[in-house]
Amino acid sequence: MTAAREYPMRKKTINIFKEGKKTWGSYDDFPLAAVGVDPAPHLSRNSVAQPFHLVTARDELLVTMAGTGTVEFRTPSGVKTLDFEAGTVTYLPARMPSRVLPDTEALQVRLKAAAPVTEAAAFFCTSCNALLHSVEFVADVPQQKYWDVAVEFNGSIEQRTCTRCGAVADPVDLSEVAWNDVADVLKA
Image (cartoon, rainbow, N blue to C red; front, side, top):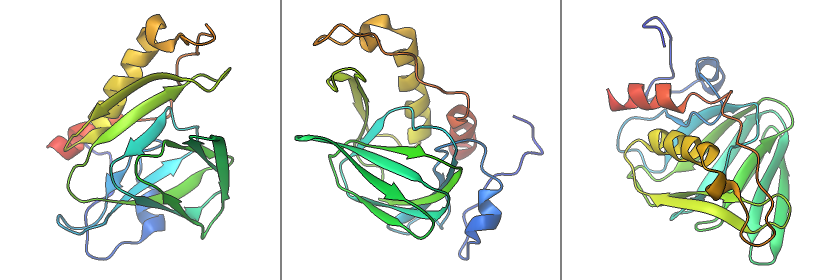
């Protein structure tokens, strides 16, 4: 990361498209509003599949400003999907694993609780849909946990092996995420 690199800033008035050009990678979740605004808007420009299903203790909304794709939900009755396009507002229920799968680059605002809440990163078997691995946490800077959990998953054949069917999941693609850099800025 270079010192001259711009990043979205917390402001009272936000031009989402202007701020979206400053995002560094997919699923950045840069906080945009002043501290204390609840729910807090978080900006991402997503171009690759979300590396894991995110589970949160509170309901969230995902507002798509540009792009198309699908949100995948893991429900007790199986996998369900909802398509999104510019203008779509997708309800993300608490405690339901969801994952963004963009078809084109998607500029999205996630409205989430301002205070840290319990979250989990969940990985599922692509062969039989069983839960492979999940890590629950509460963090002031969740981007650091997202990175750490995904890197650990990639490095562990045990975490990537399904206990139900024996399939071994491929490592998740982290080439388009900048969670470490985002976390460094948010911690500073």
